[in-house]
Image 1 (tube, rainbow, N blue to C red):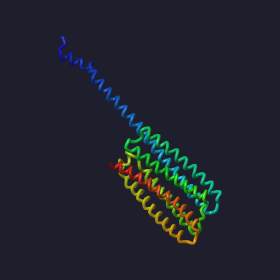
Image 2 (cartoon, rainbow, N blue to C red; image 1 turned 45 degrees about the horizontal axis):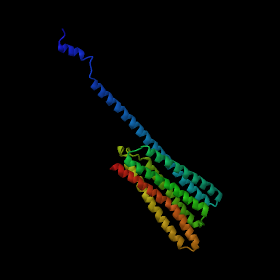
Image 3 (cartoon, rainbow, N blue to C red; image 1 turned 45 degrees about the vertical axis):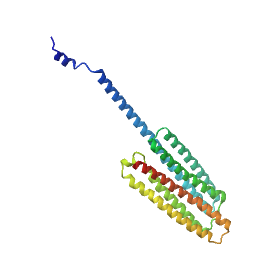
Image 4 (cartoon, rainbow, N blue to C red; image 1 turned 135 degrees about the vertical axis):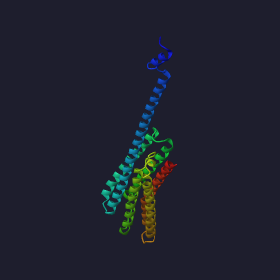
Length: 259
């Protein structure tokens, strides 16, 4: 006869507790779901990141078109200015479409809920840069302001500084990604440095704008021409204002990540 202890020892190899097996299976099941959810979440975020990068590219194209439009206009090539203006309209439309795609992906669950609004607000601020550049381009082609030759250099310097300013902003956004930036603390000083340079260049543009307006209104030009030049200049410098606003939105995201 086999003793109880022997029976237990022999049975221990073949018997198992259904509850233990069920618990192990459930743990494995949930581990699989969590991995799947994290994978899907990362894919959604990556898609938004790609759209943001593409959006920045299209907005940059719009700024380059505005620069080309003004350059052609200052050289007296109205036909070329009009053609470039059409490209500016097209680039702005493309940027707007991408902004909507960013919104759709955020609505589908990309990023943590607290970050979604700020990411969308950033994309809206970036999109407004393209809108502002398009309006400035409209002023060139539709109003054809009479810009005296000795003012052209000052106007064009503002445009070039604006584009440099946008490039710094774009570099900052390129290094930022919610939930990733602070895993690599090396990105933070770079981003803050770029935001700081955007603010500095905006101040520089403000000073140039003020100096030009003072010069224009102290000149012997007709009042109507002075006012037209001021409008054109304001439209031009509103682009840099909008870039600064977008940089402020990025700063809000940085603060949120730091918290």
